[in-house]
Length: 354
Image: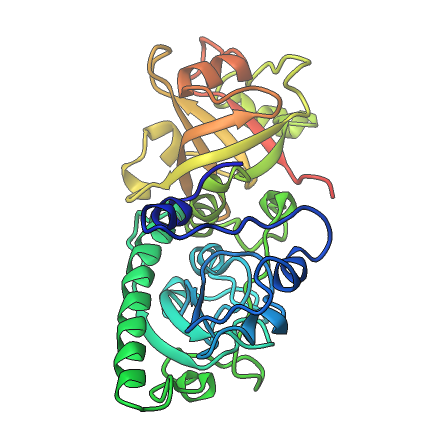
């Protein structure tokens, strides 16, 4: 089992770590076994993944505290950073980027029976940068969360030494709803459920991330998690009219049988800052279906582009299902050969199945 940084620090301080046993209800097993009868001043829980049983919480004189990477009561749940970048603040289906950013922050709170619902001890709002992905934003919020936790523990020690009640400065989350822009059907909080591979499947006909800006946000949120944003590869032009449209660009891509019908996973993309400054063959394109890919540039240094509902994004990193990550030239070669008679080549990413 991998040794964590917390465990290394505990060993250096002469504290014997307690490892969770295998099997069902490991925390209850520890509470009734190796820790039976123990008492602690306070518990600190960070990215633990388990709900603490009362038997453990009762051992802590001042209870336990937790660090959560959002501006609670916004985005309670397992994946707040992902949903901050996506702009999905349930039960709202999609927030504008500016409003979604108001949920970004870090909160130190008391552990309570209800998930992420305890009184707030410290909170800071943070604004994601235009280039943040889930990895960079998580790292920044985690660093600040650690600092805030240490400050809360120092303040707790001072209060207890002075005979003051523990956590006397804590505030209820309901008092922060207006500050955090929370308006969730009168509930006073919103949720950030765990994401899965299914969240990366893109339906160009109905998906809320089919716009250029929305797709960039989705890839930044899901790409570093290994989920990415995925669509099924199909040759553009299923009928004569569509093929005629494609022929304006060349002969299209002749996808090999091993590629046809496979998923293309987008790992890194960027929206074109100025759609009017695109390569001419892209700027002049008309009547394209969202999900269409285009190749421009010389064979040795091709560029791969994806047409969204409202503009082009450039694909910087992608992966064909069942294959390792490729450079863009390698990916273009794997997708198919371009016609020498045209400036570009097209294929489509069709809506993925369930």
